[in-house]
Image (cartoon, rainbow, N blue to C red; front, side, top):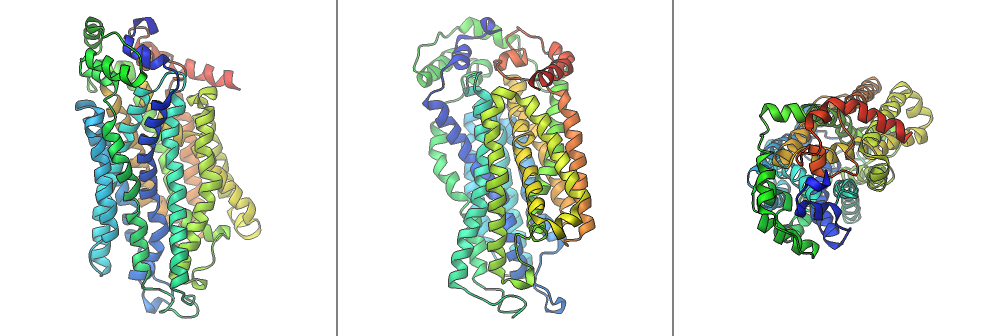
Length: 529
């Protein structure tokens, strides 16, 4: 319990909300803003790249990326993200959170610029270099997941920890909005200075060569927020939990956190030694899986199932927008006009559906709890996707307004639901020694699900075939319901210290948590109703 904990950890857990908390949210959150912008802006430019580099006059249709090329361009960053999560998650526990935190931003800056340069003029060289830099970009993005979540959880007090971690992740919603907004504004400017007829009026002149600059600028702008944030990340001290419990330096932990909190903290050197001796088990030990095996299974499975649906939604929305009546048919637009309308639709859906969900989680997570929000989110996602699948023809042909509403609600409940809580829970459930690694394992499992969305489910929507889109929505509904079921492997963490949750303080044994997880979770859910 709290009396068993170290003075420096008690000070962090009971600290009033103050300026340094908001600084940490902004510094960590700007990384997620950049992550989301870089990952999702690609959806606004792929159709333009297809018109510029893959036009075939014999088809009588605008140029379009081949299915495999489209999936590779959108999915290669996800592969890099998975790899980066595992590598930087492990390094975060091995070397310290701060030591590797700035490296992720440097990689993002360099590779965002490289993605825009994409040397060459032939389709093969452009796509090849674009995929190379986007893989490395994803590698840097991946590192941000476990490090930002772990740092924020270890800095926060226990009363508002979930709110702060969710606020960091909510910057992803802002990044998605800006991915659409920046693409929309820039394409509108290019349209003004480079007017062209629609494809139906002139197949050749409808593709403006200036578009080759447009998509590159959009991708390169992703380097800007990461570059601005780098200096402030380097000024952050190592977390007190890592310094004391892993580094064993009680004096430094007390000094660093005392400076941050503006109070004097006792060093407790002997207590730190005993504390560390009681928590030496590693990620591969039997003791870890005895205490936390079910939790790891729960965080990995739910994030995996969520991202199959969530990334499928985001990556395929550009193909569903025409069915919703948000953009014109391809032969009624020129190349840059198509990018403008796609970006505008993406911006509207993100602003009205995606963005509010993130911040509903921030405001309600400490009232409703992580477990309840995740259960309700998965359930509602499944219901709305199932409804769209069953009534797709009617929605597309006779009621596009209802179609847009239902589609927007799936995004809302994804974010006021498992897309936020799957990020929060792995940062709280596991002990300090392996917290970053376990978050990385969970996040990497999510990206494995995202790759299923990018390389498999996305193919169902590329041709605009009604039956295939309906099948894709049914698959996403099914995976969401599976996520609902797997949530029962998890425990509620609201209002508890990290050491109390993990059993590090000796007040609550991890095995007890594992064996009681279903009863506790079910009780929490029942009480919230």
